[in-house]
Length: 485
Image (cartoon, rainbow, N blue to C red; front, top):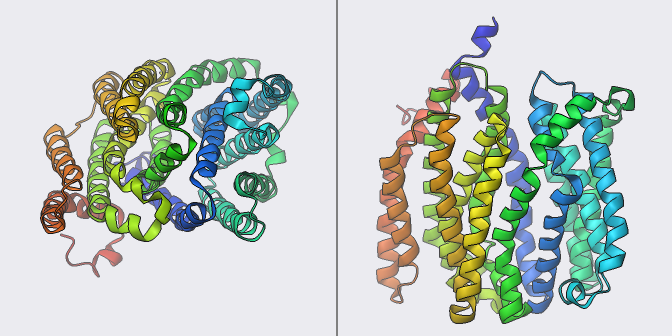
């Protein structure tokens, strides 16, 4: 019976089932997040949005350091049946609390310095609370996933975003408290989510100091500590754009750059839905004996989804910006096409990162992240003073494209599978042409080219999606879908 459970078809169905559940939670919540963008861009000034972006970037840097990136270990070891979940969760909480205590000592000492004050103004207390609630929510939500309570995880995503929407409207539209309101909306929503998860999953059952396994703690720390600089380097890659744009061009220009990422984030959000389910399947299927074919098929379908979604966004990026983004921020259309194209490689880098996670090769993740950080920072320092915000978009594309190539080759040592190079190169060339077509001034030529290129991308990839549907959908459903052959 156990052999039947591990058949490839059941693996795909499990992956598909989890993807659908995450999609319900993430898609519903992200739709609400999209509604926040007009609120931000209409209710806040460029400089306010710029400083808020910098504070959140700093918080994102602090979370992996404070928490020792233990949430990643929670997923890796919590999903693995070889390890006791109570021990895993207890170790995760202790690591996180110790880090928050240390941060509480350090922040008052550095917040008064002129260098730190330049970036965070008088928001050091809010920054600390933001880091505390964010790191604990990350830990608890990852553990809920490790318990295979994916429906609860998805529902919590919806709950969090509804809370964020309500408090954002309250603080930015009603009370009009700008940066403070933006941060408080996220903090309160994260705190409410923590309380919700504790009671909904009865997480207190999994904290037991008597089950503190020192050997497991050492193993988890050996796994997650190399991920701290790796995550920091990725964050540097992502946020050096913001910091160096602020440094060279000012907070208002960084507000424009921050808005430029909003539309590309649609692509990464859609991938993230699949990515969470993929991370779980890659770990739980690591001993199934069908890994090579499983990885090949999953990567193939992953490519098709990314190409079609990215092509669709590139087709409509200008009208979406004009409708969705406030007038003061519409210059972001100049940089969004490059960032949309870069997001494809961002998603691939994440995909290959899961292979490092399964193989427990976190040092390899660190090395490749370092390469991305160096490329990104060097291009920003060199080109931002010359070509402005375009440099930030170009540096992101260059960094992720380079690391994608490195990881695609390197991960084959740990998990061999067919990358579909011909399909990959063909589609990337077509999407690069769509990116460039967005910079054509004549609207009729521009949209003629974009529509033709989109149709080619769709025709090259839609059959793969039908093949996936045949694998995972029940026969009863397929009878009503005769076009899927």
